[in-house]
Length: 545
Picture (cartoon, rainbow, N blue to C red):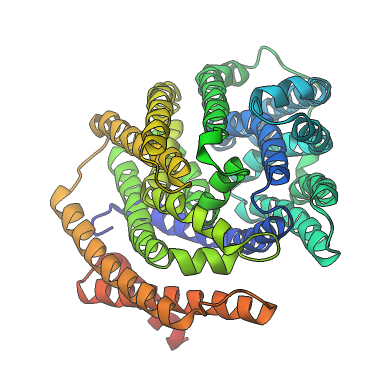
């Protein structure tokens, strides 16, 4: 940012260092995902077996996310405040209560979910055949074995972030992806059938869940002496946590109901794609992975500092830090959106096409891929806005806004699917309508959150922001055009008949994308965009050393 206070600038440097460390591990996580998911597609393609894996994983992840999405915003600000304002022993007295309650809940929820899995699967897969439902139940019951490890890792992740130890926390996520990647590699290497691959992938999910928790336990090894063997029901921090947790839980329950409804829509036979839910997942995977690498890392790194500023009532540093994060999101994702859309056909073929995954299947992904890519800047900005609310210990406002825009999302998806079927267009138009509904609803959500936050922020230089966005958009369009042009020249157009052709396609798309990014950065530097000039100064310092 051009204008920051001394406090804001210092926090910005700490946030940048934290984000860089987390980002490195999330880049590795991205690479593992890029390796694992195409291998899963190689064995399962867009057939019903792919939907078995998708639904089973969605069920277990949905249960885990109740813990994940509650513990971070409800526990971290209070744990960090206790560490900073009181003592480490006081913070751990509170953490001990939360840990034992979390463990007890997991030991009840996991067996209960396994027992009631046929009922849960019926909710998610109302239109699936009997065989598909039976396999979904079996695979989900294996995956639920990892639920306890995932739930505890959510809390240990929070504790590590409270100490601002981000690398050990992020390492767990990387090991989780590694477990799935190893299972997928084995399935492809041994040319397992789709049904046998499902079993291996389920156990890979469980192994990865264990791997997610292990580095957290080791990183906190010297702190476990502070763990108290009791639940303090009268702890004021514990009571305050529930004031934050209640709206979060309500929002999560509603979002899960929304996802079930969207799964129901995506399973509409009029879409004419056998693995339609998996197609929706695959079409957004590249964008989601990019979101997980940078803005997710930034939101983790920025949260403790936002919480400190909010607690100290530092309005202008809070404003500068938030706006700086939003500017960086725009600087990163506007050009990436242009590049992804301009190279979409070559990119999707290079990533997905192999084995049972044909060119026709990758073409199906292209329209929803565009619809989702158009929302990348919004999805990244949503994370920063949410973290600001949580840092201010305000969970009700984003929850109410989220519920309202989720209802809008469902309505837009249903209406979009109806009109896409009426138009008798491409088979992927219905999936694109669902993806586009998310982009529109999340855009409205961010606008509403920004309007609510405005009275609680300091000075905002709208003229500078508008000029910045205009420059970034112009440079992004030219960078996207160059990437698309080069991809057309560098990527082979024939069928993927060997690993060498696959590698050529990946290298061609990567080279085209890198050239587009470089042109974007050069143009932004010439137009005096602060972020590009900061990058140039950083490179010069490194070269000088």
